[in-house]
Image (cartoon, rainbow, N blue to C red; front, top):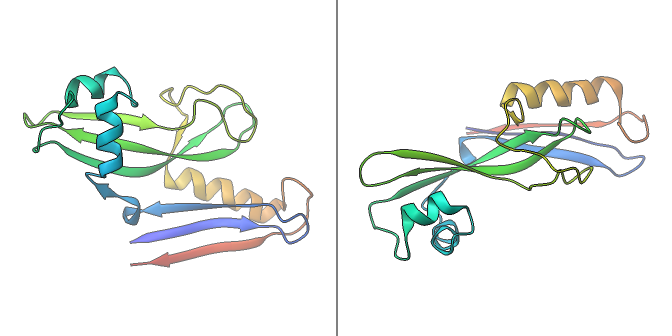
Length: 147
């Protein structure tokens, strides 16, 4: 089950779309495994994977959304759940170090920065009600669900 939620302004051509739900999962994405083996996602994963990732490591990649505490906008990233052959599960956030909207450095691991689906719904509801945050015009609603 998945959902696409967002808004679009015909006046200034700005808008945002957020993809929610389980359709945003990936199991053992090869590019992530290769990046982790190079150390691109931090020392914890490099230690976990080493130079040759073991076959029994499972990586589940999920889409995630983050709230910038400075400009109040929401931006997208990913969260990887890595389970090694002992059964231990490690969570790793993959998101920009800077908010793509205001370019401020953001700690994506800080409390309250990651946004759940209800937070995105409230964010979009506010824009649907108040209009475009850039020009004030009425916005087009984007709300699609699929299974």
